[in-house]
Amino acid sequence: MGHKSLLFWKLLAFLLVFATAGYLRFESALQTQVISPLRADALQYFSYAWNLKYNRVYSLQTPNLKNMDSTDAAIIPDAVRTPGYPLFLSIFLKRQPDIQMILTIILVQALISTATVGLVFLIGICFLPFPWALTAMILTAISPHLIVANSYILTETLFCFFLLVFLFGFVWMEKNKSFLASLISGAILGITTLVRPSMEFFLIVAILALIIRSGWKNASRLAVGLTLGFALTFGPWVIRNINLPASNGKNRLMINFLHHGMYPGFKYRGENKTYGFPYRFDPRSKEISSSLKSVLVEIAKRFREDTVRHMKWYFLGKPRTLWSWSIIQGQGGPFVYPVSKSPFLENNSFYHYSLLLMFYLHWVLVAIAGTGVIKVAIDFALRQPPDNHYSWVIWVVLILIYFTSIHMIGAPFPRYAVPLKPLVYLMAVFVISKFFQKVRASSTKIEV
Image 1 (cartoon, rainbow, N blue to C red):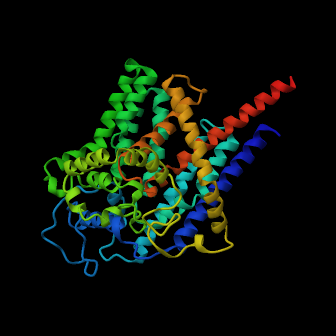
Image 2: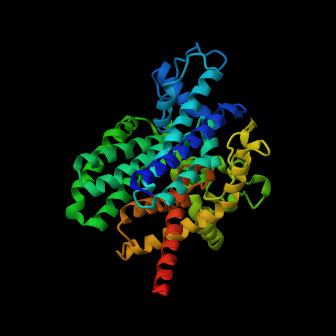
Image 3: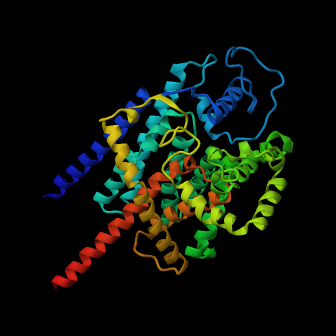
């Protein structure tokens, strides 16, 4: 087969997977009916977007959904949630919200999610042979969690996209040693952090890793660019919050994050009925979550009283929970808020069978990816890069380790791991490709 012919078939295969990903996402967005889509976190994001656009105040205060023309002169600014996703939502808001407005948001998210599938291939092809990069793309394309996420007014889709854009730009920056590229990468990291604040400390991890890999002399210029870029996009949010009183929610997310994850097994006193929401059953919840200090004191106290149980929960239970299949605080499976209709609930459909396939592959892929993460992390610590594609692999590994570590400290809700699924697929496919590469090499030696 000639070079041009091979290139044609590769392009055709890519376009087929990309088109399939788009079809699955747009069809799901059109067919899924979420019961009360503006609830819980979704209502908070909507409230921020509404108050920002129409009241010029960034506030969690819930608008009067029955009379959106009414205004509240006592709207108080706060900082419970970062403004990345509300700013995105504000583009599509109408003064009188309706189903069409929500559908528009969902369809745009489906478009962003489709672009993310293409981005997975672009990242994969940088360190994987074409068939394996396409495999990672296929897994991302049919992932039920990534498809269903588009139907919710939640951060998963937007965060996943910016996370992969950052990864792509960051490795490009490291290879080219460009100050401008480092500035852009830092800015993208800042935007990603504004969408989901769990990325806030990754700047430190990235700079330390650059220094370890390249030495301070070579890494310092890139570190400065990253920091400046990050400050340009995330800095205004920090400056805006400096004068806000503590009572306006500056530490509320961190307090909740630590508090909600402190209960072993995600249960209050081991009672099954409290699973996923243990803090709602704890009569001392209000007292424990009154301040950052109070929640830290309570966690320390519980570690002293039952060290083994809490060590097991924090170091074994939390990672297993974070990477589990079913969304704990939701309808189950890939669904967060309850749905009355979804193509994934229809028997004998492609959606149904793809969900079953990904369900059975889930722990296999997580286990394979986890094995690869440990191996590459050890190689990194010993400064023994496995091959020429080490730059790509190490940053995938560092992001996965970073997020797992963050959620070992706080609440390990599986929903938070949904945007990381493309990285899991890339890592799992990388490990499998290396395995087959070694098998082929061994077979060649035996034949010789």
